Length: 341
Image 1: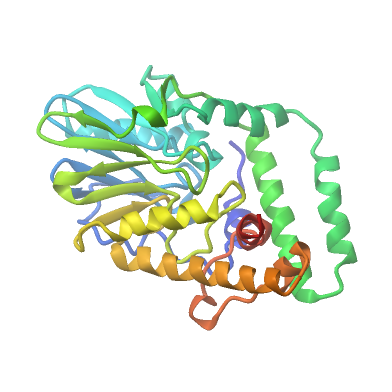
Image 2 (image 1 turned 30 degrees about the vertical axis):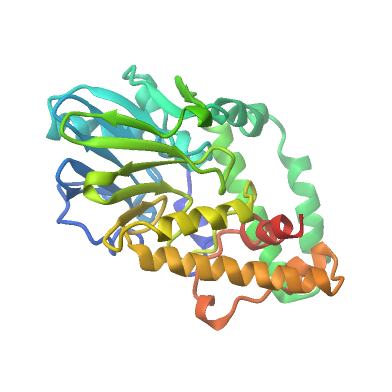
């Protein structure tokens, strides 16, 4: 896949160095674009370092039992999925049961082809294939110029430098997404999980993995808990020092999920979709951030401020001023729109 990582990083505006902060043991495999470490007995975590390549972009891992192995995330390119398969083969002789996509977004599923070519089953929420087809497959090979034209006009019309920067981040995000869509071969999940059938506990042999449905960031969010180890693969329900991507979000539902996370044991370790392994303190930090977003949105709505004006007026408080913002429309603007609804 032809991909310019500098363009991707420029959207994040002061994003943290992802690969260097993980509180795990020394790397057992280091590919540059991702480092694999042992987080606990039978739990290997893959921490992506997008500065060094786009193969993963998202974190993942392998849960290794005596009898079976469960992989986490499809990643952004097949090489990311291949790395997870390599982890399984390097540290276990047990067969791979499946890989789990935590949700349908492109940075977590576009690498599924790496599993498909190995005939590895791919588990995901039952709505993932439909959303991948609707949001991505239908745009492959389509002229994107008409889709970008409204944003180009808004940039040209913007008189405020701050608004112009926000609009520029939006069009760069869209260009990145469209480029990825056109250069990817999509591979869809093969084992679909209905929320009514979850949670599902899987005995891998000496270690259990529990798959749960918690729709908030998208309608398709799954987490994978390893209760005996106090570890949660949270997907993008947990963001590390970033304004969360919210264009698919139900912010009210998402906030309740964070309360569930905060109720886990104090020693719980979270593998977020992006960034280093972290603890309850980061959950509480995201709760605080989302509460501030909601409070500002509610204040403006009560004052009769129109939605588009509310998006422009939002100001991050000092304590969150250094948090990454991937795209204004994908993050803050989408969150305020969800609250207005």
